[in-house]
Image 1: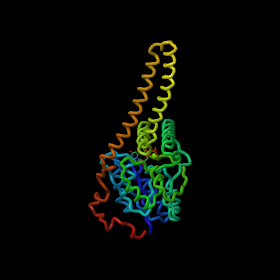
Image 2 (image 1 turned 180 degrees about the horizontal axis):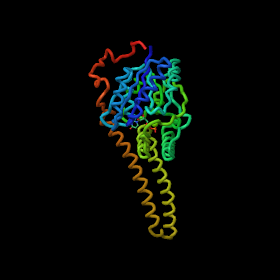
Image 3 (image 1 turned 135 degrees about the horizontal axis):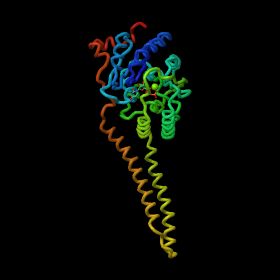
Image 4 (image 1 turned 120 degrees about the vertical axis):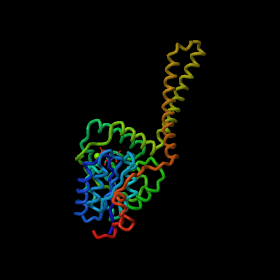
Length: 324
Ligand code: UDP
Ligand code: MG
């Protein structure tokens, strides 16, 4: 019987783990899906990992790992994908903002042959104004840059084993999971869901972290900002031609160019363009530098398997064959 793995990145979510594990187990057992839950604690500073361990002791379908520090949600998702052994893998937030009731629908579409099932947000749920604005701006920029409608898409999706294996072979360090699942293609279906209220704890995104996320993802997925540099160059050349002609005419007709105002303005404009362009190029060089170093995406410090005294060897780690 096919196994479904659920990957749940968790950063400082001690209040959510037990509840999420309980709710998910109930939903999946009720719909008769054989499952495993893979919690990845993203270098949490609270008791998230011991909560995961507790849950794993109570239910052998639960496993988890802890990062050595906070590597970000993307890294946690990829670590989870690496640990998942299912024939299909669902990635979802562990704060239950992604309603678990949708999983059986995803599972059904997968059984009918879909290889990627995208979770599409019907609305964005209730968020603070600042968060809404920054998230809105973020998605606008991203959608423009990578030419996909990002506003409704989310990290809530089901991937077939084939797709997971392809994602795991991608060599890049700076990943953007949400867009990569579009990029790889495959037979894609969608399910729609309402974003739920977060039950415990608070959102981990600040305005600054969201902007950083936007810039990192935009530059790891698109070279459009670099082309922008060329556009700026062309604009200033056109501008200079006009000024050149005007200056020449004035010179020939004997009316001297007035004062320094023009010179100062030109210096400022060109200086601004140059610095901005250098900044953009610098950003890409930083990205290249990071990729070239080839450091791992994440470092795992502990897993529930080893915490259980190394009991989980290849033999009993596989739960495919056990009775449901
Ligand atoms: N998360 C993570 N690492 C981080 C930040 C967040 O693994 O550095 C996880 C978090 O625990 C949650 C999911 O990513 O399961 C979504 O985070 P959050 O609920 O804070 O974001 P929001 O729902 O507000 O967009
Ligand atoms: Mg959330």
